[in-house]
View (cartoon, rainbow, N blue to C red):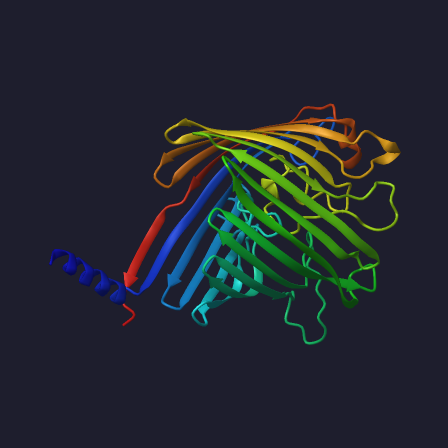
Length: 423
């Protein structure tokens, strides 16, 4: 009888409290000391040090066939606005996400608006959560969700204003596209997954050097796969992508990426070894572009935390061979330490047939849960650069010390969660 009472109570609550509204925050101040972050440290220069902060509020609503999320944020550097100023002089406030997801049938959904698009290991599409501002797309998705199967169709058409005439698009940035279409398929088998992706991006083409006269679009295609599968006590993951179409309106593109990682966790310690190859173009080449670029992924996650490659840089360059290994182990009940090493070499030829070895990077990150919803991370990275690195970093000397240190708090409290009747 008592069990029947609890069952009736559960059924009553699930029917009455059919809608939820929640508010949560994401505050993360981060101090950084930069002495060769992102590029080689130049002669006769002072290191940089600053504190940046993300202040984000997420407002979420969920009903039976509808989900809505609105996320607003301020991303600023401590001290970038003069005190008692009646406005934010750096225009740091922005709309991060604003989307609605509607259920169209038993397994079909559509998601419309400004949103994070993230798949698999986030190599091609990722949320870029390390960057304070994150990454979003203004897009429309058609989604199928079945048992162990997912299928997404994505579409975007970008304009910078509501023109009376023409469709000129001059928004700049790494691979800011005018049009996008993609399909992503994912299949799960117990502990294994296989994903397939086809992506087309259209970029504004111009008839003049001042980017005033529009002349249609040129297109870049990316196609490939990502997989995960266990083999006894080992877990393997990897990817392979091919890019083709146009690198520039007058330059053909043919580039590839392949990666394979193996991890082993016998107890509380994780061991991992891996390799990633991203094709590049010889520095003395004047023909076809062979440089792969990972486009809209969380690139900070890959190829070293010092962001020497593919984080707003290294496009249309010599590519990369990245041999890496890492160890992650518990240092306490609520703390851990990650140690990772990278051996870098160029994939394509350097000038004057220089040695392709670029350098070795060592990364360390310590994480500690301080309170409920509060985590502290401390990181240190060191780049041991070679002469080859100078050839792809504007000729800066490789002999200087190149290191980077940071400390960050991540504060994610759930401020409000309210359930209410649809009546």
